Length: 514
Image (tube, rainbow, N blue to C red; front, side, top):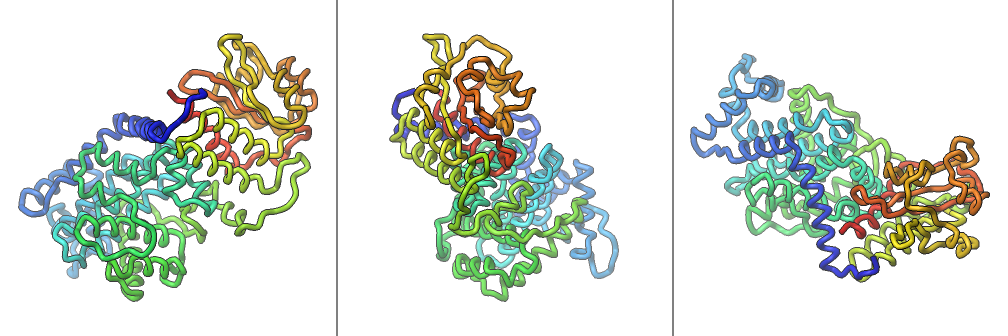
């Protein structure tokens, strides 16, 4: 545990985190089938009759997809002047355009594979962002002189693949990233790097590479440099700009009732106007076209448009973090503490601690013991605990033993905070067995007291509220963080603070993973 984590070790750990997530995503049978279908559609080319035939055949082989494409072709947006219904896929392709149908088919593949997962609300938000970005890419391609510009729509569609997959497969991590982003002090890229060990963009690129998607599309997902963009020197660079622009437009349209009049629209023009040749009038027209086409697309999929939520930052209306926008009013922090001793600005203190610990790991200069100490200090200070310690397995003595502690009379309490490795049925064993983070608001409850071991009641008889954070890697129980107060904590731990605490613990688990 005391070994140095140099930069190469930190990079290796990041690759392991990404690899674990990739295995979970790409190893799933349904996701494998999705990847195969996506690759098949992407490879269809419009340059000859075979491409049109292949696309028509592919659509017709899926009854649901056939119905959706025909429904789209018969919306007011595309219906012919004669008013006659479109009843064949060949005609739909002719009316909608090969690339339009191709991108729509890809979008519908994502919807079918992911829309009905256990976390449908979050996934729906990310799906709509992806669909909207693809429409922006399609509109930009219509005005481009680049050959093969239509691939920008596909790149824009998959720009949001990382958040989409994490929302559906690792929803807790998704919430942690959303919480950090909504705090306003981290970009989505920084937050995903902190929590996942790789950015959302890097995850999207890795998944598409796994699916054997053409490299020019994969490269278009790379993050752009900050600041004002310059005119692209080639098609690949232009596609990269369009993918990022499309996603920013999608996020703006999702949250703003009057996007053209918003400060974010002016920021978009400043960042992309010169590079993509867009002026204010053209941007407003783009908003109008994309919103109209988005309505038609959602209608064809039987998906009702979601209400817009005015909010700040990069979050997209996640119900568990909407409150954060009003909780972070600039740099001002509320004074004082709850009666339990917990600071009123615990969230800000936790967020600062997460950032510090993340930077320590990324530097590769910190030992695991130093990371543990930093996390323990953050918990102790941020949450107003009386006593805080980390208890780790000591195989030689056959015990879990406190290694370091903060707080009142910490040395005596640290020395006494030991218990056998042999499994029991008390609260500490149950927490580790189930890898469950426990946040006890009132330890005087009889049901809680019945689960407390005798050594804890003797050592810390006045502990009225406490937390237990197990350190479990795989099925290996390594120990736990413990911290308490002498007063009950009826204010509890809200979701944003919970996510930050889990992020802190996650940094230690990542460092401890062999």
